[in-house]
Length: 64
Image (tube, rainbow, N blue to C red; front, side, top):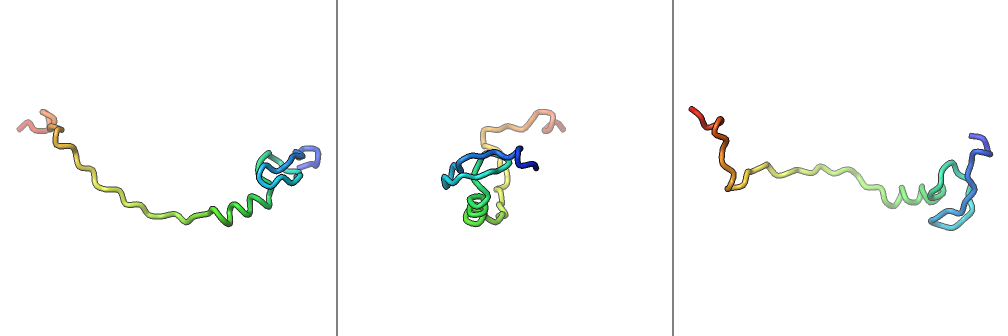
């Protein structure tokens, strides 16, 4: 990108003046946030669906 396309603003996290493509935390703050807030994905096992006791079977399904 050209220097004219960069935004000059104060970083909302640390307050230092930066020139970035988009408004938001500066690159130093982004790197710090990634290092401290990153979490590994976890396998989550969902419970099997069990219908409520007040649910009655469909008449078409029970037809013999």
